[in-house]
Amino acid sequence: MILVTGSTGNVGRNVVRELVARGERVRALTRNPAGSGLPAEVDVVEGDFTKPDTLYAALDGVRRAFVFPLFGAIDGFLAHARRSGVERLVLLSSSAVTFRVPGWIGAAHQRNEAEVRASGIDATFVRPTLFMANDLAWAGQIAATGVVRGPYAKAPMAPVDERDVAAVASVALTSDRTLDDVSFTGPQSLNQVERVRIIADVLGVPVGFEEISRAEAHTHLARHMPPPAADFLLDQLKDAVDGRGEAISTAESLVGRAAHTYASWVEHRIADFRR
Image (cartoon, rainbow, N blue to C red; front, top):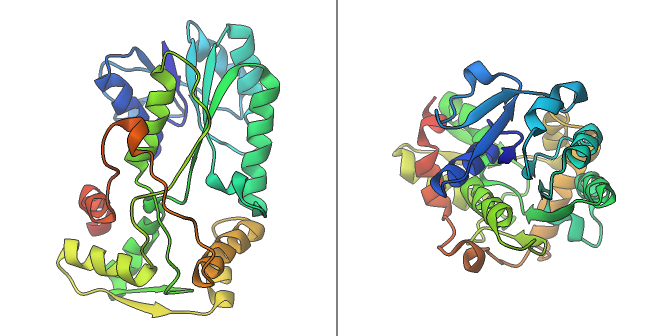
């Protein structure tokens, strides 16, 4: 039995789909089983990392688990996993842990990785760069004004499709051996103006991009995340503008297929942009 935590999120839902397609027995952990919308053949159970006592039943009979990186709240899960005899963990981490200056986000993921190592359970750390799904935050602006506003317009990044992250995690969960840690990007280096243009082409509507100051962007981001996390994201964009962005390195050889392009991701999430 393989347990998928964070099973209704952008990555977890796709991990469930990948594992079911491989014929694996899957149990999905969620706070709201009734509203999960997961396949009927999946054993959907209620549980919450912040309430460790809810995890006993979820881990019964589980030998491998996908671990969603809930910062500061995975220790209880790891303790129960060790006692339950879980043999392998696949932790969703971030490529930021490999940066010379990991920043707030990288440091948070480093702490998660350290806790998993300390558990003594064999583990693989899946370390993607930023997600294409982050750009869903533009949907409201596109619907309301037809203009996306953001800082560092020409910062080239290589975001990754959540389906590719899930594919890597699924290979790590089902492999005969524990895989080495995997860092990877998406297949294309695109700045925000180019990504907005692709969204406009797929949606078939005009969409513009208006560059704003770092200060204005920080004020907006800090409403949704800790200010140090906002600083880290903005520093990534500034570094990319200055020519210090990540080199493209996809996981194609591991998953056995081409990585999804940005256009294919927009087509996959078109309903979310139109909602």
